[in-house]
Length: 107
Image 1 (cartoon, rainbow, N blue to C red):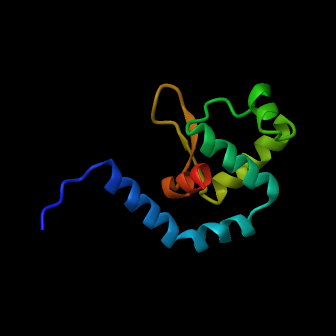
Image 2 (spheres, rainbow, N blue to C red; image 1 turned 135 degrees about the vertical axis):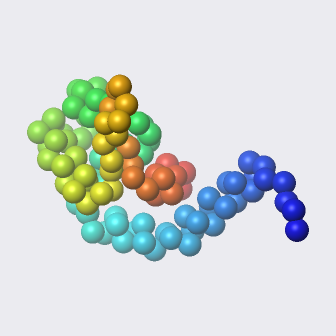
Image 3 (cartoon, rainbow, N blue to C red; image 1 turned 180 degrees about the vertical axis):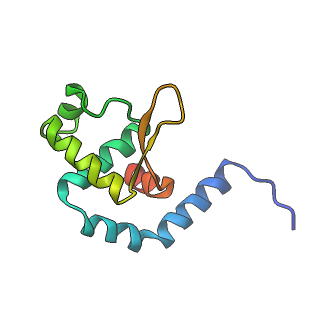
């Protein structure tokens, strides 16, 4: 059976994948600290975060101070929940799992 792929099918598939893995993603939430979760959510919302230590970013998401953000970023990198893309001219942080990012920003 040939089906033409359209945006509706793509979004339906994404929803199915995130729903199927929701328990795993909620387990992530239970295994990390509130500070780690809040920063992970902020990075998901921003999609590509180039300046995590900027005061406006920290203030916008109520993340405390730059020292706290630095410590939490290191922890999220170690857990491989975020990725630092340095292969480009302007490096940025992003959520490693795009389905998790979708779930955080859309549910």
